[in-house]
Image (cartoon, rainbow, N blue to C red; front, side):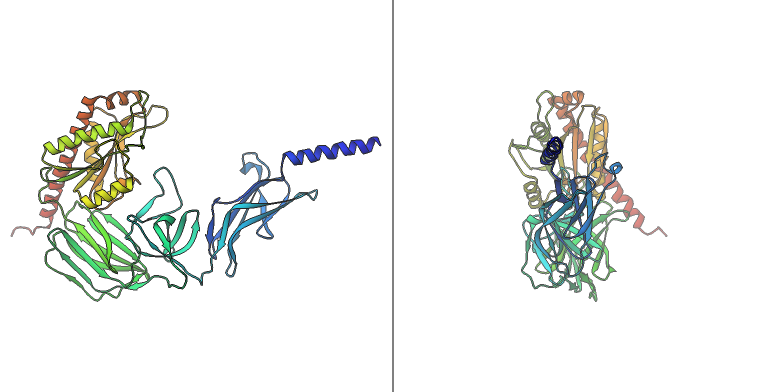
Length: 500
């Protein structure tokens, strides 16, 4: 009887332990988001449960318990991978996990995310929608969003080959993919073909405002552009296009475009190479007119001086978007508006026409700012912000640009901002911020100073120092224009024939 009672107590203790510690604590796909996968893709899973167990998923696919050295001492962490095979079927289902302990206790769990295996013979197509659809390079994410390839026009046809969460994978070309947010595309009914096109013969011409390149296609295909320097040229890749171009007609009126030609680096990648006549590019845009790809190249202002120039000034944040806050209670949205208003006054005094993205403490989304500027078509953009960092040690001023062709504007502003006495915190390139995204005009962002640093904050809230910063930004714009004139003259002299 005594032995029976002891056995009963031990069993009860074991039952209590199992009740407190479930055999499976968590089980999920990696990443933990609903996914569409096609043959060759990897379904990855992770489970935390009873150490030393046999764990399987997706029927009988084994999972491996990781060595504790790989899990910071934790035991019972299992991982598994399954490569999707042709013919596999799974239609938006949860993944089932099974665990069997050495003493034959069993448990099951299921993922929160749903998984779908795509049939490569049943194509999924989509078209872009909205005012600013865009492609991302990958699945990365931070406070600025995923790294963007660039904007697309509406009704561009995309071949969807996968999904993770709210991002669809797009097949651009062989071994080239991108990701597009769910909210900027519309899925099409089944039955379509992979979007492709032969190219027609080009027309290259200019009117009173722009130079144009027009390439007839049979469908609106996705594209990617790069504005390169030394020499200055615009390179546009059209995915799904193959050359059937028999001639390129260059008409009268061209002022910015030089020699233009094309390449076919891959069977389904058609590359336009557009050489520009000026060292400093003033922007471009790409879109469709019906199914004709239209590249619109901006020309330099007639006079490289502030008088007569249209300058956009963006006061960062505003309204419900407060931005950073300093120890004194000063708010970024108030400081940027105050500095931007002073900058506007100085620019108007210099004879420039100024466009403000906001003139009061109101909420303006970055998408709306970009659309406003697209319509206003400024010659330049300066976006004004206030920096912040944890700890309060970081200080100084910095400037930001995305495209290497617009770096000279950022450098000119940075050099002048340092003359205010602020430390230099750097000139930052490839900046993935919404206001640096447009290619239509040279643009730069100025992080005036760190509100998180006590010394910088005192300067930021001082109206006299705000005025000083505004004056130096104007001086930076003047230097940019002066340097552009000088570079243009050097470029012209290099192309002039030598005197006989």
